[in-house]
Length: 137
Image (cartoon, rainbow, N blue to C red):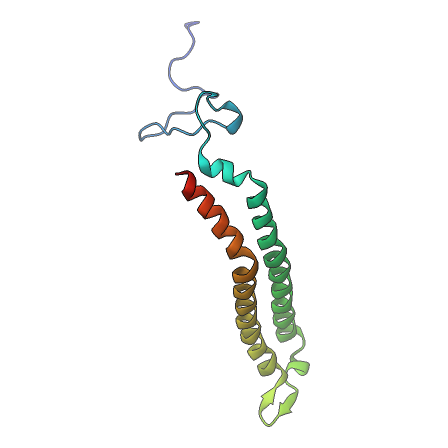
């Protein structure tokens, strides 16, 4: 038996990738102080961009949660409340059909509502950020 350390990859040293080495950008704190930060990083950290993100999230997240819950209620009713879903509303139209069509209507209403919200509140802010960024280039 030899006492020499093993050569090659050991349990703590996994083998390297088969392809060329992958380079990654240094973390923001390790940036070269003599080098200017990337303009996108500056924009991402600006208060203006934070406000734009908050405006999007304040609209999109609650509405997404509400729609998913509405969809799950529909699925659960379809699975476990067959008698209720089979109730005739008018002629051969039952509750299941009405709620199913309401799912489509809700989808289109949300898309229209978001489009209005984005055009009124988000797009002007995004355009201002874009113009500032392009003006610096």
